[in-house]
Length: 86
Image 1 (spheres, rainbow, N blue to C red):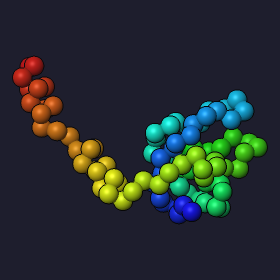
Image 2 (image 1 turned 30 degrees about the horizontal axis):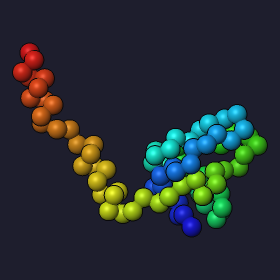
Image 3 (image 1 turned 90 degrees about the vertical axis):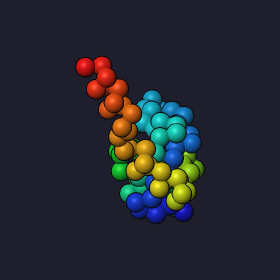
């Protein structure tokens, strides 16, 4: 079962009906879980849907979450390349 605030990865982005909202491999944040259905912070399901099937997601392990801030830090290498170009 998923918990509010938990990060999950989409593993099934197959289109349902005519609307494709999910992107396979993308990370989403759970806002509400009713067991078999999830509400996702980044998306609002179109009517008449009430959520996304939990089976379409996998939890992100804690050790992988720790990598996100490191991936977002700017590198000094990119800055030095810009300085060299000037």
